[in-house]
Image (cartoon, rainbow, N blue to C red):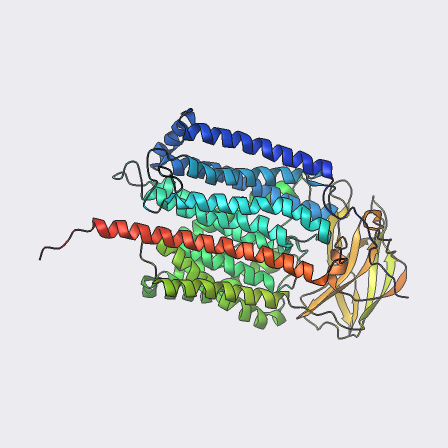
Length: 612
């Protein structure tokens, strides 16, 4: 008998309660008003403490105050946002949806981090009083100029912040998409991650306008710059976080593609900008930060589902070794060569870490498609990294037509690879007959072992990406097994015949599903799901034996999503978010090009004219 587990109409899976929306809006308005008041009084010279604080920090690192203070603020706020983000993802995996933004403690860290990320950018804009902050500065009024890096940081922060209210609107229309890759979620993490490009450009502007030009930078500033690249590596890696927990809702081949994109851009730019050994420092910084966050979230302090993270050590070693070749003098070609190395040798070395630490290792059968996606993306990323390094070194970029073609080509390549990774199919007339055997119960309730026979028996091959039972959202803490997450990779005992390797929960608030992915086939069916009156969903019982059809995985994992809207509306809303994201990429490209052009003019004017 086939069960019907689709949710009926309900409202608990929509947006937050209006009282919480009002509190959040009021709090944000109050903080914004205070910051606006401080900025206004500084600009009108009614307070001096802000400028004195910035200048005092600037003297330590030999940078203008409009660089030193924003960088100090940024370092603290972005780490706060990262902790909140990983914690938030972990809570949703372990507990499911929350009742609103104020009911989730991680949201406070995210909001504080993003709000003061925006504030860091605005401080760089507001601080300059009696000076034009560098040759590339943008004129705001007749006497007020702002550094390009500050504008980009503030813009990226604002873009991320806008994602919060839009996320609530999105949920009211489409229900809660419990996935990292929801369009408004991508706004939040994309704005925060890409803000690091603005930070690196702001630091360059400060380096070119040092208060003491003859004073050489010490190791401290070198480390700060390396940590900036480490932050960029972390920021570009957050798109992979579902894979870090082992609850990815898209094909596994996307994971290595996302890894090489982050590694190629960051490590190529870091090695060209900072010199020998820099990629290893960048890798070490990213690894230490992610380790601390992982221990805080998955350890006894927060006690949420654990996460691991990409190591990038193999990619760093590959880039360091390739920098020994003479071709390094031709940055663009060397960046492309590094992309090939990162997507082949580097990715193979990374696969050893993935096999040892991640929930889902990379099967051998996936490698042909993996390389077909990863190599072009890594080559594009290496070229973009070389372009960024060219700006940060103060060297001339290629002529406008060439650099625009390179950046547009990189965006198109990444978009095409992503579209391919998202392409999947649900097999027709595929079912599974599941026989459950009770195991020793946990303190929370019933645990079961499964014997599964799949029809047709060749639904997945002998080396699929996964055929597993996923149990999640069972509640974090207490005696809950797996801290709200259990993943059991099934053992194949015959054609289409699989058995459990460990008990999985079938009680309480758990959602226990059978998942299969092999190539483009990606599908799932429920084994047990608790009743959810908030969205009008009945319980899916874990009977001793049943047969159920395989369906689109999204209908099972994203149970709260609503499909009760015109088909075009979701596509149109997604295109709006995509357009905004492309606008952010364009803004970063514009900022880098402006800095390159304006400072090269200064350098050209300073060159001595040869005597006739």
